[in-house]
Length: 182
Image (cartoon, rainbow, N blue to C red; front, side, top):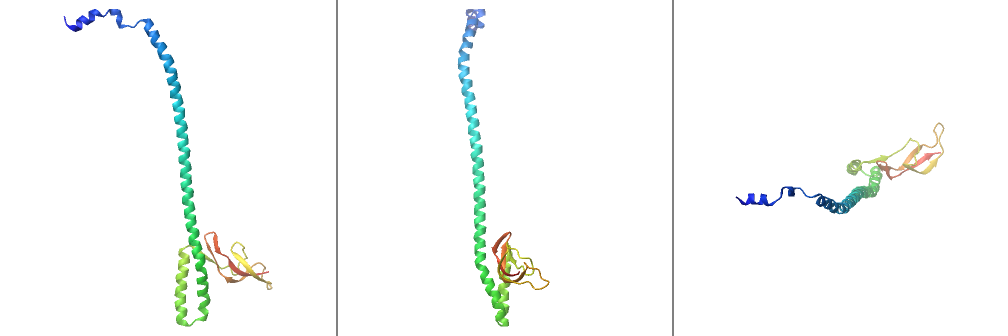
């Protein structure tokens, strides 16, 4: 006989099935241990959900911060450029004032510089505010003088512009200084 056959003979046939007492003991052992494990698992899942929620909120806050910061930088840059343009406007005004008082050669040179200056303003999106003959609009004009309206002319219209105004988009860089009929 081989060793395997010897072993079979030694193990009783009913030994393959555990006794009822052993099965009950195993169930009793599993129940108390399973409940704390299930509770721990549920607690861990709730905690994980809470951390995930916090992570999502913090990620959203950071993204909003990043967008606000980028917008603030862009806006500051645009305002800085507008400040430089405002400082250049008097140079253009002085060149225009010089045109009528100079000789023909100098006039040609100043006109070339003025064309270049206007091209620079146009390239930056700056528009002139020149409201002669239009109704006075305090959003774009500053009335520095008034004169009585002549017959047939309605009051509240711009008669003369003393200093051109400029705007970039909806923002007024410099208000036009005007004479208004009253």
